[in-house]
Image (cartoon, rainbow, N blue to C red):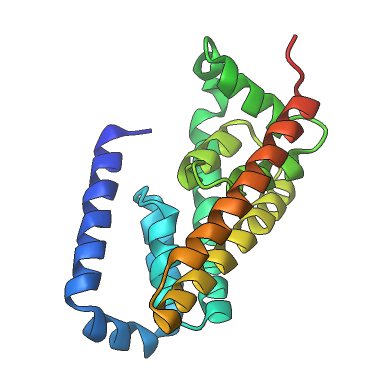
Length: 206
């Protein structure tokens, strides 16, 4: 992952959060009047390696949960396809050297290229510690078929888009984030357990 782009993404994340706090009313009113522009912001955020959770929370604060999930899903999918295409064209010939000496990364690669690539990609998209753009880069470098890639991406993005949108909406209405945090921890635990089992079944250690 290019270091300058990562630094830029972190700086922009901080700027977005700070700006959202200082100008919440003004920015919220402007974006709500132009909802179709929000997927464009999500698209640009993914290309700049801004953490996906940033835009998920912002969408939940600005729109109704279902609309927020739909808008972020649209932007996420478009960005994922662009990064996949760029990586497929740029890095597919260098995958052997990239995975050499990285056993954990090789297991992810083997899972994505195994019997159930849609399931593997879905799980990776759901896990909160899996970086969205990095998964797109690896998938493109591995030359995953586009239908498989888009299906896994959409299936994996829907649960998190809905969860963060409803969590943000719940926090606004109740003034408390603890119920949403508790639900998130429970969901994360279940998905993490399921993902570990999936990777082990798909790529058993030799």
